[in-house]
Amino acid sequence: MASRALASRFRTDLSAVVLALFAIVLCILVVLPIGWLVVFGFSDRSGKLTLANFRLLFTDPAFIQPLFTTLVLALSASVICCLVAAPMGWLVARTDMPLRRAVRFLVMASFVTPPFLGAIAWELLAAPNSGLLNQLGRASMSTDGGALFDVYTLPGLIFVVSCYTFPYVFVLVSNALDRVPSDLEDASAMLGASAWRTARRVTIPLALPAVAAGALVAFLQAMTLFGAPGILALPAGFHTITTKIWSLFQYPPKPELAAAASLPLLVVTVLLLRAQSAVLGRRGYAVVGGRGGEPRAVRLGALRWPALGLCLAILSLPVFLPYAALLNAAFSRIPSQPLTSSRFTLEHVRFVFTELSSTRLALKNTLVLALLAATIGTLLALVISYLTARAASRGHRVLAFLATAPIAIPAIALGVGLFLAYTRGPVVLYGTLWILLVAYVTIELPPAYQQLQASFRTLSPEMEEASRILGASRLRTLRDVTAPLLGPSLIATWCFVFVAVVRELSAAAILFTSETKVLSVLIFDLNESGDLAAIAVLGLTMLFLSAAVIGLANVVPGLTRRAMRAERVLPSTWAATAATVRR
Image 1: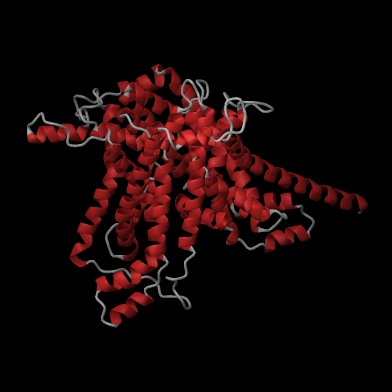
Image 2: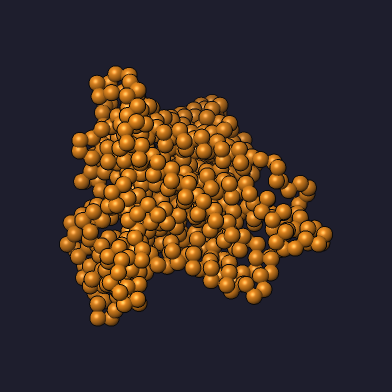
């Protein structure tokens, strides 16, 4: 009996040590890069304390112009996203429009498309001279005049960024409208209000907090995006703040200025997250009372099919047209010419996978990093979710903050912080896959944590308590009881992280070397050389890889609903993080 008691104590102590190690790892992941950003931002090249970096940042036109451009881009994209996504969310959530589920699925599918790949597709469509749409326009008008569309402009960049940002607003608005009961709308109609007045006085006010929160999410996404500006702004001869930070790492590197330019992004992100928390925390437009009636679909009558046509026309911009352009470039002998039976070829596919030397290394690195990041990130999120949901440690609130805090760090700024942290002792990771792995796990931890945290809220702790009463340690309870109960959610989270890692570019563009290049960076590099066919093949490979992982995961029984929830978790993570930052 004494030996059993001793063994039980040893298991309990071991569990405490392991859980503490996970908490320490989390602290290192989040605190270390931010700390080095602050140190370098306020230091000169000799290491002395200075404010010269920030003085230069806010006085030199070379930095002021990117700041102004970023502000215009973010404001314009947020307004456009709200104007497009809010009505579309209402059509899908509250009307009898046909194929509403298909429309919602296609919006979710646009999350899989990396914005930088969408920007390349729009290069193929709307480049001034070779764009397919411009060629079609000139042919239809029988003229050799100027281009109808020019994607290499600030309006072109705003358009492309909006195409891949509006889904965030759509998800927030449609989810909010899904939860609005129809009782108040029915009461308004019974009192004689028209459908438009009911929408203006009842439905719209109830959805306003979600629209405002969506506008902030769109602003933050556009402000911190690197891929699309890197593809479209640099050839056009102008910078956003993210491309300017990237350029500071080109020869000769200026890490102090890069750190100083990253800190305002971090500060603005935190402030906007607090503003979003204030918006979502309002009680002015709350439904008071008990359980409301189920939302009833608004009958559109003769407008049902035109509404569907409008939604499909909007979805053609981020999904149908870009995918068609990539397929055309991948299988047409001349990527800038429309695909016909006589122009069909597999030569580009053969070249990419047999002759392009960088493909195998980039594909291998991407798969290795995606597998490791998905596994480690899911495991870390599981343990931290357990510690916070069950209040299993004294500092569980601090852990909850740290687990969601990385979403307040723009990926480009995180890349700078990790570069500064791991290019010097005692641990040097730069030039290895490990530094990319650290970046990916840190970036994708918040959505993974929020997904599993939500699953923990639906899981009764009684079975865990029974396991503990029977002598099992916390670690064994987590492994043998909790994890199996969360099986589908764990798989959905793993797939979510895998897909997100495959499409990540911002941090990788700062941290890669010739031996650690990944698919996203290879595509970005090939864009500079203008090899559109190879880019299209690699882009389709990336999309196929992401779709295959999601498709295989959905084979698991009971996973489909949780996978859809994982696809929607990112906008909700912004809200949860805002509340955490506010506390």
